[in-house]
Image (cartoon, rainbow, N blue to C red):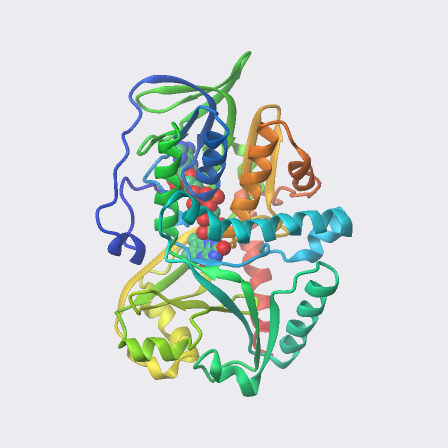
Amino acid sequence: MFKQSAQHIGTYYAGTYGQIPLRPHLQEALDCDVLIVGAGFSGLHTGLRLALAGKKVVILEASRLAWAASGRNGGQALPGWSCDMPPLEKALGLERAKRLWDSMVWAADEMRALPERHGFDIDYRTGALYTAVLPRRVRQLQESLEEAEQKYGYQQLSFIPKEQLSEWIASPRYLAALHDAGAAHLNPLKLAQGLAATLEAHGGRIFEQSKAINWQESADGYRVRTEHGEVRGKVLVLACNAYVDGLDRELAKRLLPVGSYQVATAPLDPELARSLFPKGTCAIDNQFVPDYFRVTPDNRLLFGGGCTYLGGIPDDVPAATRPYLERVFPQLRGVQIDYGWGGHIDCTMHRTPDVGRDGQKYWLQGFSGHGILPTLAAARAVSDAILGDAELLDLYQGLDNPRFPGGDLLAAPIEAVGKAWYRLRDLF
Ligand SMILES: Cc1cc2nc3c(=O)[nH]c(=O)nc-3n(C[C@H](O)[C@H](O)[C@H](O)COP(=O)(O)OP(=O)(O)OC[C@H]3O[C@@H](n4cnc5c(N)ncnc54)[C@H](O)[C@@H]3O)c2cc1C
């Protein structure tokens, strides 16, 4: 269904990284303990944890490392899942949902510590604002804060009323915000490259431009073929996001690929850039289809908003995004936009993560547009289970992720109609 390209697409991250190292493509037959398909955050975090535990890990990547969502996202590391806590609580009960939440808080701490521990830089900056446009969603912010503190013991949120907002963000659009001191923003391509280099330093091997064509189970594990080679692993991990389609039809049926896109402006005058976020946070609003944005270390505004169904991305991403950007920051009217790009997110029916196992085949998917910290939390669950402790993975397996009715063909139109309704509700 998706076209893969052999090289990175024209994102701000790829355009400003410098020389991106190219890993070899697979041209041999290899044996390993754990064979991972997909070199995004899901595959890389899982692989690194297992390599650090002494496992022989091989990762196959169809394109380039972090070629898909992990190299194209907004860089906002926000504690929580796309679905928020209510569906998790409904499926698991409060006590088990709390254990899942604790693993999310662990992921937020680990995201800060991991690059420092292994000596790489990800342009890590703390703090995020969750902003409200509509009066009833100001109430939602307050309710979220109370629930986070009282039910989940999360003490990192503070409420910012309208009269104090200008100390945090130079936008007339918002009525109030929550500040999350446990959130952060970062450069995702630097994170992926840092994880990969650390994995390789611990004996892991990564092959780029090496698409897994199919997998087969055998008496002693799994065998995956690529165009010019094959890998046999005792354990198989599928970490392919919405691109899983032909490789595993059953996993694909539980995902709807949704297009999402964003832009990066030209570098702004440093004082203007600083004035947008005086305290250096990032921001995401609490509309159903949110705007999310932040300033990069080289003083560009990165701005995302809007999404499409049927996997399409607008032909002219800057033109599609500019009205939303200028609605938030009218002072940037006419600003030069240097980069515009899109990517795909792997939505499940209830936006709940789809992480599990069947025999020694594991999978991580369904992050539904919010995956920087959730992939790390899920990678811990999967790697712990592979190493013999399935307590966290069992929680994920308590979530029900049904197939989309009617398969690929019907899922997207049904979702699009649903989204049109929710978009209308974003107006009032
Ligand atoms: C535009 C956009 C903005 C986003 N913004 C944010 C944000 O600000 N904060 C946040 O938390 N999340 C955000 N997300 C979501 C987040 O980026 C993802 O949830 C996360 O990166 C998913 O990681 P992954 O490893 O599961 O998938 P991916 O990063 O998509 O990796 C999957 C990899 O598998 C490879 N693959 C697939 N099939 C095969 C095969 N057959 N053989 C070999 N390789 C294969 C693909 O090429 C790909 O590299 C955003 C996503 C997008 C698209």
